[in-house]
Image 1 (cartoon, rainbow, N blue to C red):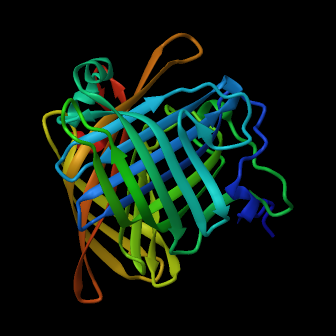
Image 2: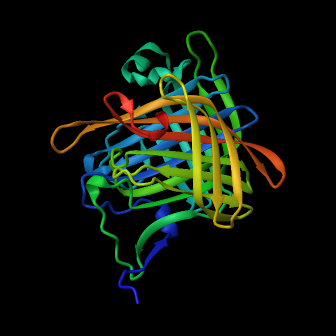
Image 3: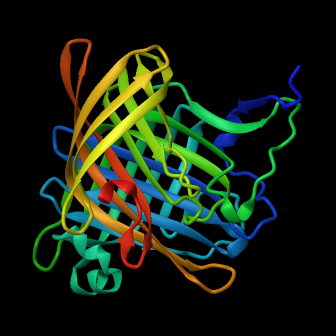
Length: 355
């Protein structure tokens, strides 16, 4: 009989709401949602990360416009409690747990004709127009929930090393996203309004987080229709061991674990992903071959100093991507994200696929 305690994953409706923060400086409660309208070539993602023990939230709004422009805003608005996901003009509200959320944003975005300029954020915000933006979206789940919080079977929490943690709990769900995105005009130009009716993915995580806790990862959520979607995840290990490969596939109304996956990526001169060839195998034995083509990409970053004052630099390239996959004899087209995170050392991202 094994002496190893059994670990189970639990998820409750109340986990849709905020939690009592852990007594660590880097506690993070994060909600992320994306949505894509394939017909228009329109997409967006939104994130709030409450870092209440540090006194602020990380707020991000990113709009991929049909003509290739990107509207973007990031801020660290002050917060005093972890009672809600509402900061910097962005609010993510739970209407019905696991079924219906809403997103509203009233604030500014910088509009980038060349999103790669965000490699230098100060110059990008200085040299491009900033306009008022209004977003009203409804997000409805089209799938079961995937994930939760690992804990011991007797209910005891698993001890987390806060300095090296990315999250202690995490869940995801594929969604339908409907509503409006509105931008004021630039100069004498009139404003623009888009009605979005698309598909996407949302996730929620909580627990200690530093963006430097992982050496690199590749995260590729995608959705083709309400009964077929995938998420591939490859996470590098700082000890140099084989990366962790996994994810899930939605077949009908059921998720299946991915037991293996591969991503082969093409990059430009800035080490930004441009296209990819992907393969995944589910626990049922079914295999999937997917190709991806980046529509628009914005490079983002996180910087901090470690306990001895060393500068740490994390780059995250966020790309709206069109995917193709043959499914049950039919070639399907969908949209989603390729999110590539790398620690940057001596000016170069360290992921192995840049060699």
